Image (tube, rainbow, N blue to C red; front, top):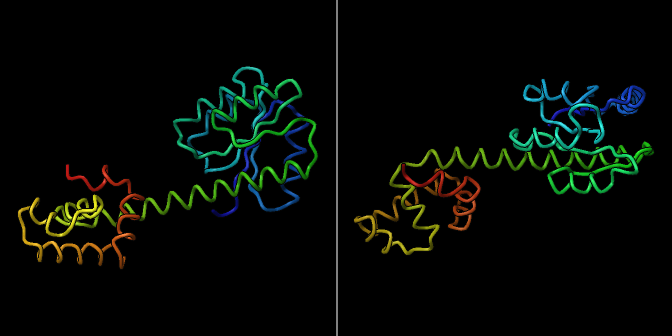
Length: 209
């Protein structure tokens, strides 16, 4: 990722600018604030991936409802809940629903910055995984239908002669397809081939339609 995006969603008129000043002073983040859950959700689909500093108790749409409505966006946001003393049980429930962390108010700056750094690291790891899956799918999509059939046989641990019998081709032809698909996937072993196939989604990608 480039400069990580941080979204402050809190109805506290004093808290939002104080957090903005803290993060701007650090200089590592692109920061944007929202005064309500409704205001954030109205534009959430258009925003870059980022970390939410999300207040649990807000008028209208509260933090838990914001988290629920973000589920269709498929992990684009990492959430840190900002909670009052009476919200701890609710914050734990939120973490079970997918929030990454919670911080109890009032909090010190170091605690907040550490939580944000951890959330940004999780986002980075998720993005790297997403890119690896995308690359693997692109590699698999470059195989011919017959190469995919041979790949499925390899994944299932079948010997070349078994794959040949099931596909009604010669073992030598299976060897050729196997060499071609491994060359296209840029791998040197069956183990590497299987890892790429699983990263790509395996059955949904390589099974002929």
